[in-house]
Image (cartoon, rainbow, N blue to C red; front, side, top):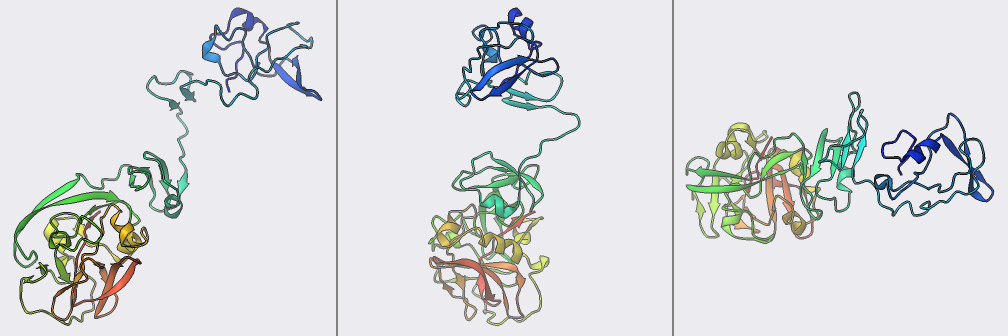
Length: 365
């Protein structure tokens, strides 16, 4: 709705002369009487709408004036009263400031030297309850204390904190050398994604550590997608092609220790560099709450899949193509540690024998 007064630019001389402050008085027959009254604000009309196209969209127009002062006007024509939701409106809006003209490149301009813009404030759960959020949607996440923009699609949202570094690039190429951590020598280009699946915006690798590439399906059972396997809190990684384990050393079938995964043994930092680490039970556990099963987990940004595990008894490769089990950096007991377990029916925090070897996912703060 556009409200005009006699000082508004673009008003013709005739309209300016009669644009005394006015108010509408509702009678039993409706809005039929209009009285001039000193001290009230603005009239609701212009003299010639054809000559004042920039002011189209007023609530009603008064075509006949019988008296310029205190005489009651007998005819008031509400030309667009009930059509107010469909008539043309201004394409640009300026709020605040000394000039009413918005910046030529902006559809909406806000100007103030003492106040700010307050976007909707939502918790993480409330944000995730938004159905099919549009790309570019902006909210303030009160759980992570950051202004977030939805950078993904409506079917696969990817909320990113504005001003947060996240991933500085979309890939990370690393040459691994066989030794005390990497089982073989090869160059891997890791796909990187920025997401707050863990409850805060982090940079993640979108494939298992040591994998040639992200999984090609939720049931991908290939060695190239499975990556390498680690026993809990031990730096040595293992490759398994379905027949042979590398290195084919004597298998440690029992581990009992009172420790979380230490930074000195963390394969993420050892193989990817400073800042990279394994996720905690809280972080990877929160990731698990974003999905319902293997299919939905694979369709997410991290491309989680059924990469299987190596048994604690002899290090043979099992469950490939049926379930995925990924280490968390936190232990449960002397012999067991927390894991993220995924299959076709469920996803959630489980426990794994420390002597078993599982894939690893890495993140960077």
